[in-house]
Image 1 (cartoon, rainbow, N blue to C red):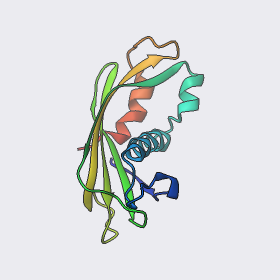
Image 2 (image 1 turned 180 degrees about the vertical axis):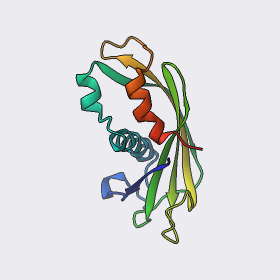
Image 3 (image 1 turned 90 degrees about the horizontal axis):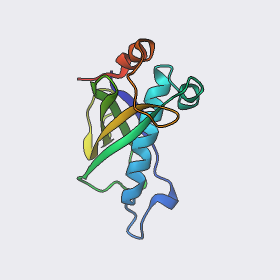
Length: 141
């Protein structure tokens, strides 16, 4: 399933040309991953209480088109690969035009994230079966 998070650019995220600053995209992508995890019952705080965390090891971002203040923006997030102790997440920031809820819209930016599943002490560990089952709901195409 593709998780969708509507985003609204805040004044502090704009540059003097009324474009969204590049650093805001990375924050929005992180918010998208956090919300996707919450949607499958894995809020970060709850994960930490069970002794686990996700740690981003690689982040690749490709900027395509500038977002502007009034744009109707959506962060689309899904897990592309779910390994034993790692996962690859794919994300897009799209400017919506017609309100279609499918993975549509003008792509402004994309990201690919490799995340390690670790203990709260930072040691990589295999994803437990019960957590894997919850993550399966956000594994996408």
